[in-house]
Structure formats: C-alpha cells, structure tokens
Amino acid sequence: MDVLERIKQQVEGNPVVLYMKGTPQLPQCGFSSRAAQALQACEQEFAYVNVLADPEIFENLPRYADWPTFPQLYINGELVGGCDITLDLYQQGELKKMVEAAVAGAGEKAVG
Image (cartoon, rainbow, N blue to C red):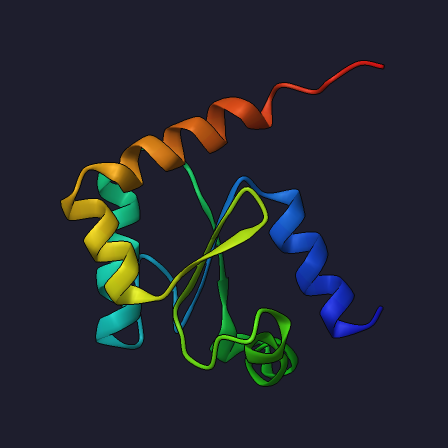
C-alpha cells in the first residue's frame, strides 16, 4: 500500500491521532511530549503513530497535509496542527471539547 494511502487510512480511521516522535509513555522529543500530555489530560483515548519507528511515514507525513514538523494532531480526519496549536487549544479548554466530540461521534454512523 502506498504510504500516503496508509496515512490517509490512519487519519480517517481514528477520531483522534497524534503523529509523534516516540510514544505517549516514552516521548522522544519535548514537543511530542507536551502534545501527548495535553491529549492525555483530555481523558479520552487517542491513537498515535511513532514516526521514528516508521521511516516511510516520517519522510512522507509532511507532504500529506503540507505541515513540515512533528508532532501533528488530526481530529476527525483534519489536521489541527502541531505542539503550539495543540497546547493553545488545551489552555483555552477547546481541545477537550474537540476530542470528546470526535470520540463520541466515532461510534455514530449515518444509515442511508
């Protein structure tokens, strides 16, 4: 499978996904650590991808949404941003609302 297609499946298949260096339990950079901590403080489950463990994603994710740095947070298939934006949203109380809404909506599927 093409790496951009794999990224698309990860982004669209999870209500909240954080592309980070390391893992939430063992982050490998300060920016990734702070973004993961903000998400953990929202008290909802989220998916993550350790970009250091997947060189293809590390090299190609910046092209996916035209965002050059890590971490990258996606909610409901949309790029929210990196560490600074994630922390700003958290401090404003918006991140928790966004994450809760995304997680709650993930179980709801429209039936045609």
